[in-house]
Length: 329
Image 1 (tube, rainbow, N blue to C red):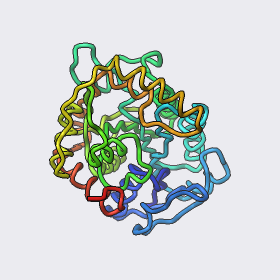
Image 2: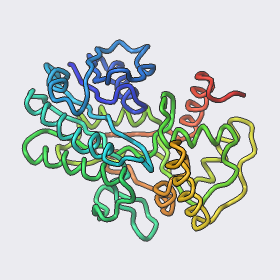
Image 3: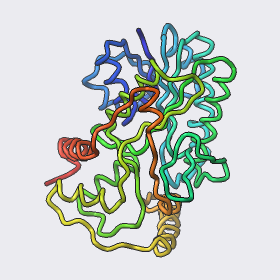
Image 4: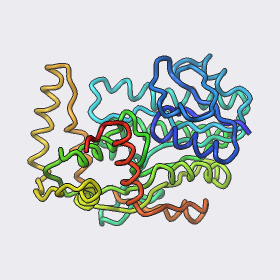
């Protein structure tokens, strides 16, 4: 069987491509001209140059494919031009799903995010059926992914066999950009996070997320969404674990969220003035006010999804950062 993977040069997409190859699939990847292809160097995949905004290239990419794994997304917080997020995440999803429909692709797995999920006010983990609306989405990244998921559901209602998966916070090897999460791991391992805020994330190994994609293809119900997560951890717990791996002292200073927000506004202002970037964004700080804890019980029950303890994700991420020369110690 042949599958097209969009976003195959990226963190999660490359992991999905590896999992497909290990399962005996033929893999084709959609790659943009001039893209960083380090994640694909050791993989026997067919490369098709194209873009989610170029319908001709999409038709060429999905031709003769039984499956589409649409993983590509613009994952940035505090983007200077948010229209780019909607162009890629929403309209790009619409374009590739239309191309898959026209090509007769049998099944589609669309990679969303837990960013689109609701978080219960009582602090319990979010689930696929936790009530949520567009107005609950903080920032343009979350809004763009929420709207893209609506596009996927519309396609499912129109007859395309689309399964939606919602990874939590993947960590592991191959985060080449890096994503905001990967940058957090790098900063923590490099000792560039002297303090922390009271927030939390659901940590999962990127390879477990990739395995969940294949399970969703084989066992998922069209139109349904499945959280592909792992273990809930506070940010403090995450930083302690990373510090222990690299032999550093974990940060002990806890900063109140109200103190960080003005810093984020100032950092974004300076980035606009200088034309640079900032790691401290208003969007990220606002998101951190809630603990992003989630349950993967539905995926475990319906797909047979499993995940390992997060320690291995941190070990593999740190090892990869060292191999890439990004972590010098």
